Length: 308
Image 1: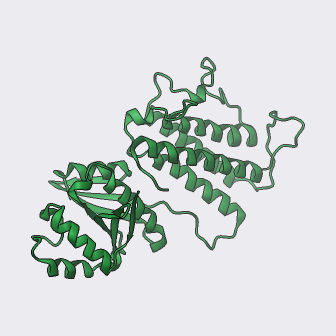
Image 2 (image 1 turned 30 degrees about the vertical axis):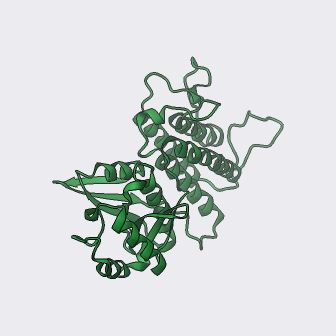
Image 3 (image 1 turned 90 degrees about the vertical axis):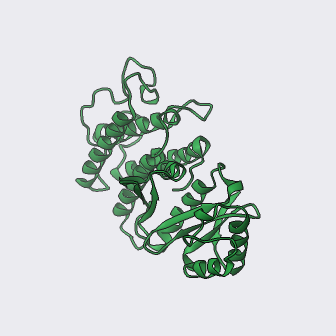
């Protein structure tokens, strides 16, 4: 199991042993370092010890990753540990550490020639900018609502936005094949789950609560379970745009009503009273929590990416 832990003096010695025997010296800081310069290695890493993490695979040290207070990151991995997702897992874990340290964006620098690093950065959804052969990458850190927020209306709306954002972030960096491939017996794919959630937003806020006249609130009437089916002309861009549109409309509707207001159109269970806006929003929240958890598992099965 690959984990990261804060680097201490004992970990520094383990890291030095790996650097001296199982790396390309050019990959290891400081620049120009050689295995016969152990004291230089120790002095360099002690200079940012509180920003560094030891990457371990079980009880074996396999590399180092750093995360400074301003969000800068970088890593190196032992030769014998490459090609096993070590760098990807370590990066995901330090991104999860970032919110607790008040970091909102994680940044990395590399070169266009470093294809392995670029592949890892793309898989975690980094925004990549190239200038000549230099590359900068920015990873937006997911953040829950503020811990001192006590207003129930703000809490439910902000948590809904957190989950809405998480759904799309889970898809960032996935290949077209993985977006359209099911990893579960029921057959749904990551892309179709976003399509489903778009229709969930549409039905609960526009159709039921606001009472809008909505054509085909469950998708193409000529396709069985259409909101769970990727049709021939469904593209990732179109589904994403449709989802964002429904989320935007939901926000506008919720912002213009009180939590105690009740749904205008309610034929699902006629024996029950129409739900309040508060009930609908919390229902959406639990639905998002379930589906984001499912996406967590499917994303990890697809390419190993974990995290919020």
